[in-house]
Image (cartoon, rainbow, N blue to C red):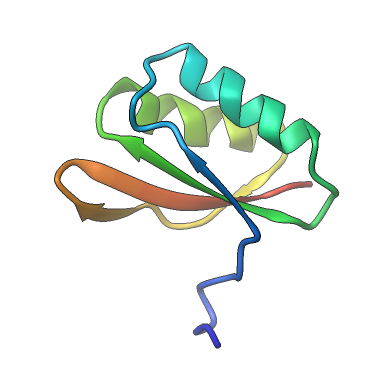
Length: 82
């Protein structure tokens, strides 16, 4: 069960070990394999990727949830495919 702001995600993409531009390349490849309405949880490090990946996903028309820090400079958010 989740609260109103959280969605269940059946996909997880951990790009904490990657650097831009590969962070969004990997995110885009994963999203391309998903159906509209499905949700992808993305885990990444602070810095350029944290700014670029959510912005690029929004520019493609996807919905991005609130970004939350999960500790040690790692952040997590969800993208719902348009």
